[in-house]
Length: 230
Image 1 (tube, helix red, strand yellow):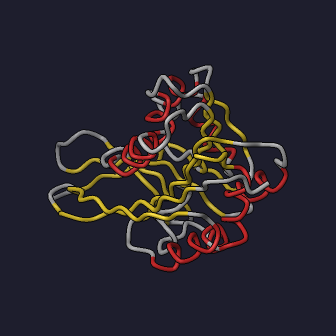
Image 2: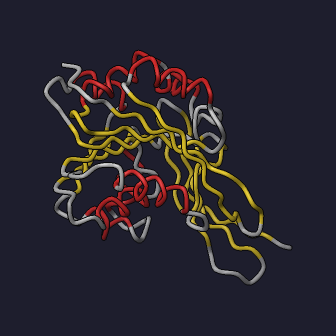
């Protein structure tokens, strides 16, 4: 099997290098691929996890009017959230300005359509800083998808997003009856433990996926609160 790559866009930030490229295997269709500092983040060939994160999470909340998504990626989680007519506003916090720009200017072709939805609101910031500063913010549902889980960090500093102090910020902004859902490419018992120290109720869900003919398993960590943490 032959694989051809072509760079589409590249950007540098204080976190390093962000590269968007196309990948074509043999005579198959071109696939868009995102890498950070050489680490694979996601592509357009396998969007199961992004869609599953959104659809499974939306089923957990009766009225997900206000949704927060941590991590824009290639936009598939946000796109799936916006398919739910109950969603009144979907706020996405993305740390990389270049990624948002590529979505807005059509470098990522489907990006303009997704961001054209009036319910979509993009904030360019570190999600931990944005939430710490948003003292009055509250959401019915929070989806965290900034890495491939705590075991596959895009940046080492992201490890703090899966620890109790940051999870406490999530509890503070989630309304009673709401939920936090975190996606992971592998089982993460430490994350489950940390969530249990902060939230009233924690559930772990696994689901099978077919990764281009290879069977695998992804995980969703769901945390709920029964009362306000304010």
